[in-house]
Amino acid sequence: MPSHGGTSSSAHTTVNVDRLLNVDDFQVAAKRILPVARYEYLASGTDDEQTLHENRWAFKRWFLRPRMMRPIGRITTRTSLFGETMSMPVFVSPAGVHGLCEPVGGECTTASTCDDANVLFCLSQHSTRTIEQVARAAPNATKWYQAYILKNRAVTLHLVQRAVRAGYKGIFLTVDSLRFGYREADDRNGFNALPPPHRLVNYDDTAAELEETYNGKTKGAWDQNIEQMFEQDVTWDDVRWLKMKACPNLPLVVKGIMTAEDAELAIEAGADGIMVSNHGGRQLDGCISSIDALPEVVTAVAGRVPVLLDGGVRRGTDVVKALALGATAVGLGKPIFFALSVGGKKGVARLLALLQKEIEAAMALCGCETVDHIHASLVSRHPAGSATTCYLRSSL
Image (cartoon, rainbow, N blue to C red; front, top):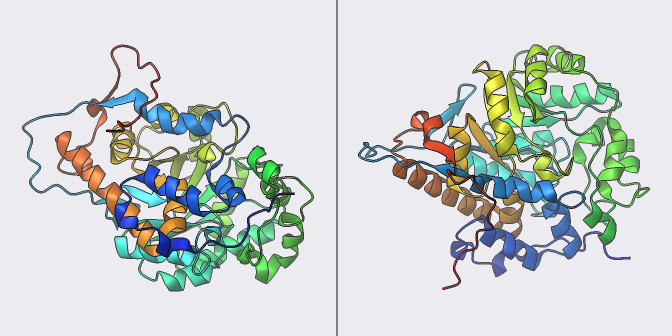
């Protein structure tokens, strides 16, 4: 059977990240240095990967409308979310097991880089460094914590309460993962457990026995082992429960919303924010892209709470398109994995700097001096009908 991850890659010194110019460059480099099973775990989607690819290419069916002769001499990408200032309308989405990409520091490395860059960092419940370790590694960063509802609800509450005590500024509740989509790549590669010495360390103090579940190897793909820990009989009352019991004084953003109906129900349940996300194409294959779901969610929310988005963001122009369609900020998931794998802290810093430069350029060419100037009139569908086109850069 193929290896389920191989030894940890630490080939950062073999990649000159200063020569990497965009997210695709980072992904190509990551694929070159990571073990096949590990790369495909980080990069793949479910089933036919229709939604994984749609997330990216759907951005190409939205077009920006450049505006001329507008002052941009004091252009800035700075913005704020729930009262916290950020250097740009981009944050690191909650995504687990950063230690697979950078074994020395894992999530501590990513969070520390976000601290330096003034970018919001969200720690996954399924991290390879503890809530407290990450808080110490990035004391000045704006840090959020992401939660799943476990069958053991006491553990769910305990974990969120730990994050509150450690100074995290908000909570993401992921609601699209009562079960995980089937990851054929992981089954094919034999990736059905975390390669030693990695584990989901946040469970160690109160639920160490859960390692027998998530690393039990009873299923062919690792995420199918993980999902056995999750509560499947949930309702919107569980959002109220978590907000009231664990984080009444912090903003709670419900992550995984793809329809107007669920956006409305989430707000009724007490959500302070909505995150449009299809889990990076790793859940229901065949659902629409995040960017195409965004307009109906924004319309339903009608300005009552911030709307965030992740899935398919690769360029600064993608960020501007999402903001024009009503998002307050956008998250990065897979691109952070790739940058962390090829360059550690320097790789993530390089990726964030490139993206900020692209956002600023797109804003300037659209005549927007501040993020607040980005509005719906700057984006449209193609007048010819927005036929899907596979864009390839010239080889010349």
